[in-house]
Every structure is written in structure tokens, then in C-alpha cells.
Image (tube, rainbow, N blue to C red; front, side):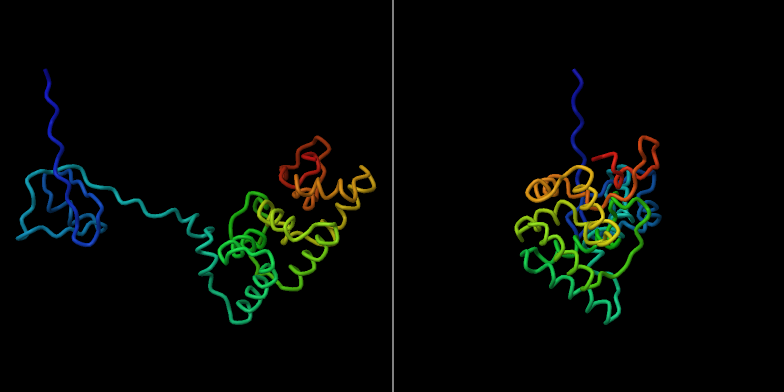
Length: 217
């Protein structure tokens, strides 16, 4: 019967709790050639057990660029920071956390990647007047603050849509072509708020803008 080999000893650095395994004929060269490994051994004696090296995988650059944390650390001028903080204040009535406010603004204005925009959304600093006007218009559609809170979590990109060309125009389309208004409109927006941002109609001939196409309605 084959006997299971004993588990090799786990080597840890003094500063972290991560396990590091080595594999080479010369463990000294492994350490020397790997800039991500820093291990202190008692009396500077390397162990006899040599296993394959632990491979350091740097964090995804995409996540660094599009995470909420990166949004918060984006370098802004004093004027831009005031504008961002004012937009946070506009959202404060919904009792979001600061992280949630940043995520909503980040997705709406291109600081956090959103498949909704494809590649069309350029990064910009949100403006208080734009955010306030959109929130006021949404309230005029019989959406209470609790409704708006849910809508913003489901579709934060709405704050980055055009008020005149998309939101107001699309509400008119829903009313004139489908007779959707009042309570029926409210129920539709709570179920599918993305309809507010539709701006193309491929009529069955794909335009590769599916996230913003009326064909999804």
C-alpha cells in the first residue's frame, strides 16, 4: 500500500500570515529572483525542504480603475470636490452610505465601469444642478423617496442620462404610444427603470446598443 507523503512544512514571513512554498534546485536563487518574496529564516539557515514558489498575482488593474475605492481616491480639484460633495448631499435624503453614494455617482458619470454605457460614457464630475433636476423630475412621476432609493440602487446610471432627450422624451413615448402613465408608469419604472435611458430603436436590425434599445421593452 502506498503511503501518503507527509505535508511539507509551511514557511511564513515575520510580517504576514501568508504561506510561501519554494521549488528550485537552489532556494536562495528563488528568493533572489522573486521580488515579491521576503522571508526571514532563523540564523539565516534555509530549510532543506524545497517546494515550488508561491506566485504573486497583482490585483486586477481593471478593478483598481473601476472599484468604489478608486472612485473615492480619484484626484479632484478643490472645485470638482465641492461639486462631488454637493451631489452626495443631494442623495443624502435617501440615507445611502457614503460608499453607496460614491458608487451611484461613479456609475452614472463614468468613474466606475458599467456595461450599460458600453464604451460611450466619458468620465466627468457630476454637477449638483443636473442631479437635482433629475431627482425632481423623477419625483414628479409619483415616485416617493423610498421608490427613488430602490430605483437608484437598481439603475444608478439614470443620473447620467439626458433629462430632456432621454428621460422626458421616453416618458412621452410611453404615454403616447402605449398609453402608460400614472400608476402604471410608476410600476413600470420600478420594474424596469432602464427604459428611461433608451435612446435607439434597432427595429430588429441590431445596432450593437442593446442595453439602451427599445427592442428590450
